[in-house]
Length: 146
Image (tube, rainbow, N blue to C red; front, side, top):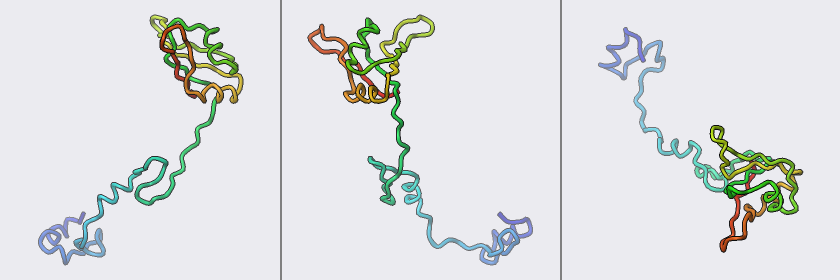
């Protein structure tokens, strides 16, 4: 960017260019910027939180453990008593069934508010609960923190 007075000098003789906008004058860079290195530096993080470029460990926000669990892949005939029985010793305070707003049809998922964080951890440790054993194949529901 040069002023109108220096525009002709900028195109004809760039080495002699001096302008208030470019006090040092125009100089062609000797080397091109390391664009590949800059692209690598833009947050390439490996598994485990290690920056691949610098090798430094990247701190991540820790997940707070909640009393609320998401339970998915439940059979459509699941009841509150069957769900409480499937969790065993872990005590459930409330169950919120996930339903369609228009049809009020049950989706096969629910949110369970456990009595304590300890109950939530105990229920989530297995990752799944057995909800039916009548078939030859055992049916399990997925459990994760909400």
